[in-house]
Length: 403
Image: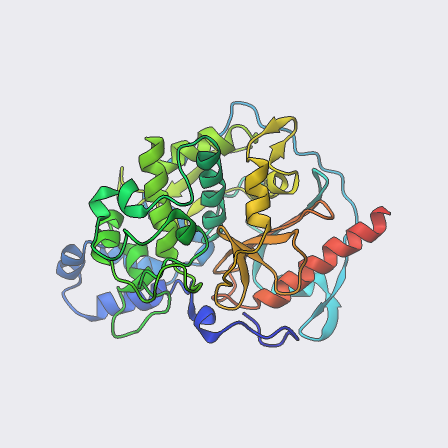
């Protein structure tokens, strides 16, 4: 999160939050000595995998973990491409510079712009193309939200349901009996699994959940509250993971199969995606780790921009589009937030985004029909406010040229 914007940077806790410091976790595990024995006891990936994760780029980690396929339809829905000029000079950290310079500075691998269902700009860094599968990181959280919306509309789930009733094995006194599905959606659960990492405890918090080979046990073993559920908003990846466990239970199928059935096939994705698991045949990492093409991330954005429709097909209930577009009562670490979607600090109500830690964005502006996908290897939560301001400027420029 940049502090150079005129908009105040949200609290430093969010700057540290969602910081997937895999290298910190890995380094701590290996430095402890007896690495093979240690990882066996901790039930985390083997030292070879851990060492690789310490050095590979965030855009390349998807293949290092087991995954389940998210099947695409036999035939993709057409995503028309008609090249149009987009804003080529933008304000970045107080200076007007070429958009290409911003993309270089933020280590962008793919940058797509669509408007009114048409792809108008598509750029890839050398070595990547329209067939490359890019990790979503926390963009997955917003996708999980769309699956929750579908389950709610079909009566499988209610936002007032208590976690302890949906997942009886998590019936922990005083914790999951207080937490509702709504609390999880809006990041107000109070579950005390920190996003920031202490080097002296490298496998705790979200880093531990990312590396564990038993996510269900991790959730069960971390049943503690930092504050009363619903009393404040604090970004916690474990909230989304619990939502994922709930969805798999009430729908009776793994999340990857659910995503394929409810969204991927109906929206006409062009390629199979994958969803990383905690272990072979295990549980999806609901809080992160969907690997898909940039064009299919664009299709997801267009689905939201078009009120939950893909062509004539209604995929996401309109009421859920309204839900994610209306900021929840509690902000999350200084940002407006609603059902796993971010609202830019100075954007309008129809300006929402799915954001991943290393610069993954699916930006949606329903007022202008604009969707922007930016997939990067940029720091940890770095320059988010400035990046969203660039996207807002591109959307505004497109809207002005359309009139």
